[in-house]
Image 1 (cartoon, rainbow, N blue to C red):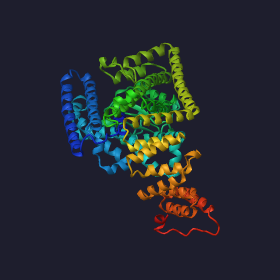
Image 2 (cartoon, rainbow, N blue to C red):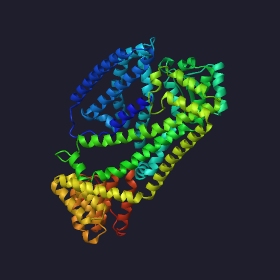
Image 3 (tube, rainbow, N blue to C red):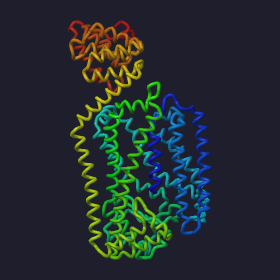
Image 4 (tube, helix red, strand yellow):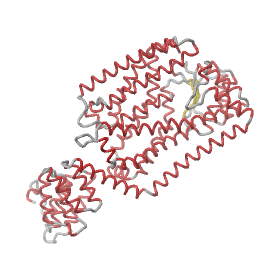
Length: 617
């Protein structure tokens, strides 16, 4: 399950963050051909992997282990093929243009391609699974169970894409507030993740085909352990994933109303009474120590630190000449190397954060839950016997496990805790210290970034200016870059530099109406009196309107007419702007009309402009 989480997370990250190159690296037809070739390659590779797996099995005890390793290799092959399709074959560019209007539609297409590759893995894996794990399974049932398990990981991605689509439906003022406030956006995201975390277990137990455990001595025993541990659950379910043949137990949910205790029929039939008590006590230990709540905070911490580091280092990286030399194409645009480096840095941070930091907390939490089972049952025999029963292969018991410790290490630890209670108390203190340090670092980081937010904003603004300056030097004939540079100069109140760049962009592209419009606004409203040039502002704004009579350009014309003393014409232009404006922007234009009307003499009210009004102006 942990491997699947990593694989899906890498696949989702690659698809979401990779920006397609322009021009496209391949045509849609060629990208489709690459998809077919990738699927064929995955099929051949998986057939070889599982045939070798069948030959390598020399005992029944080692069969499941060999199958698990082969399945992991096959899934990583599918992941590699998926990343190649995205980054080298232009998969995202080959998708229909209409899906780019919706995050949900776009990500659904990405899910479909990755699911097709996984389907090939499952079909190739079935014969090995039947020989190694369940001789009575069917191909359809095996594929359906894998699909259900994968859907558990896909659903959060789809829900998040739907959430992004939902944001676009919010009123413009709310969107503007969220985009301008990192704290508000972060709190909203945390709220959404929290809501999903609360209700998602209810969905999972149904996706996995879990059924309510029937009344009887076994259920009574489990309920008694839960009562003794003071843990409330919404239900006790049989974990029927893969027909119930997996040896698994777990607890889902950190809110009692949506908390479910799961145990597979195969594990239930294997354990004795004392061992069953220890397993349930172990799962209750996770609840009592609030491990799942910490995992939610841990995920939020990943989002926070990723955003913080991304915002701190990426702008600075873009001002490095060495980085630009390495990632820019001959035409001055970012190519494959840029997108690959950015994506690689994101994935490295993800792997380090979860593989190392999460691995540490997961291992320590498992030991803490083992200690809880020891404390509740009064003996290490139950938990040690359950661990030994789960893994009958002596070689596998000593195999390192990055998120649970090896079976041998766990048995040795719980036996040591039984001999010396101080051993368990020392581990509990270590866990509390680790959790406290993590939460303190998260809180301190948040407070520090809040205190220096203005300095960081100024720093990032400076890096953006330096980056655009460097890019404009490398692409001196790019009118859009010159226009962007002028806008940044204007924000920095470097008005003469802004004027120069606006003039440069107009010279490069004589039909660049936004450059005419912005330069006209600078001449009409500049806070530096020496930069004002009202007649030239009016001339430029009229050119901009002749090229594109948009509402904001008409608004500039109205302002230019106003500063030139042509109040009546200013009102007419402002009324035209109001009619062309989007509903969410009408208030600004209405205020402009009031300002211009206030400057009119009482005996000279403007006549309402008709369709020819702007031409007359």
